[in-house]
Length: 421
Ligand code: YSA
Image 1 (cartoon, rainbow, N blue to C red):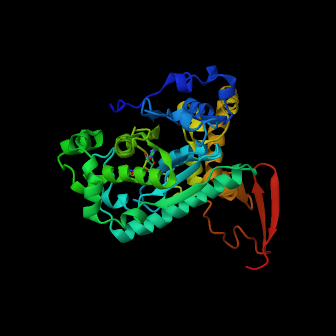
Image 2 (spheres, helix red, strand yellow; image 1 turned 180 degrees about the vertical axis):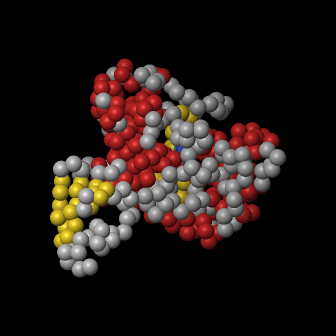
Image 3 (cartoon, rainbow, N blue to C red; image 1 turned 90 degrees about the horizontal axis):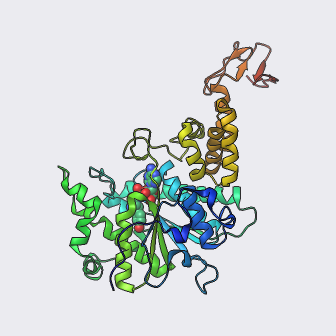
């Protein structure tokens, strides 16, 4: 059977009119009502960018999520995260949000930590080879990522589930299945299904082969491992969909081809757009512009500030991508913004929603306190304090009688009596 065209597509008959959420039928607007609702809505929000393949041989992507089809519900969807650092970052968050949307619609999701793949280094979207990471460092990073993913999933559940039944959120590590594999056995069993011509044709490989540095065998082999992961999760967890940033296209297609060849079954890929900096570089560790989700690396205040600083031309897009706010509410926020742009309403709402999801209500409160101080909204004994890390000095911030007069904002005055100095 001829393989479907290796093109990422938008199928208008599945998903409604691209880029025109206003004309979607009412039923598709916000309800997570089955596949049409979920896929169309995320397409309209701009979160789901591309779908692959164009047509399945037995099943179509939307049918997978259709509650009406016997045995098709719930589905399992996965996305992989390589532990090349000890924290997730804002770019990863977008892929994670893609998983959360499936989980909310009742599907089971898997966040896969690439404890094995991180040792090789994904060449996708890179012009240079990654710095080699030793096993110990990758293990430590993998543990940190595992904790970060669990913490985010727990926040998401605590803040939004409201007693509703969602699908499961599972964190796995691909080192679990490679540790047990014998190299020769793996090459014989898996390697034979991959054609060199196809592997060499991938954009990620072509770009690197043409670079002065070239490409190592380890990096070249990366896509085979990611393809095998998809197969492994398909076999053991019934996972038929892999989600990833659009830089993951080639690796996802490799997985699709492998699974289809070996099992004859249909699997699918969904991509989310890449978040870039103002210079157009992908936001992440490699470009050195990562905004981390671990508060030891980027404080809740810095995360909040990153989103508050977004320009008007991006903020609506980010509200759709990074928050769960319904589209009509985002429209309303944007209409208010036109009347009072100086208030930066959309930016503040975006920053608050993301900070709360990542660091919980406590994190958001602390970010807001920091912001108030840095903006000059706090004074002690009639002196403005603009550095949140200021050390309080007896005789200046604390009077000799053990009292301080704290002013927050324009109208809130507090007298603090220090019991121990
Ligand atoms: C995937 C599947 C596997 O079976 C095994 C490993 C992987 C990991 C994958 N090859 C990878 O290297 N991903 S990553 O660690 O670089 O990023 C994790 C996810 O976040 C990817 O889907 C990536 O595309 C996405 N991402 C990273 N920076 C992003 C971004 N998405 C949007 N904007 C950004 N700036």
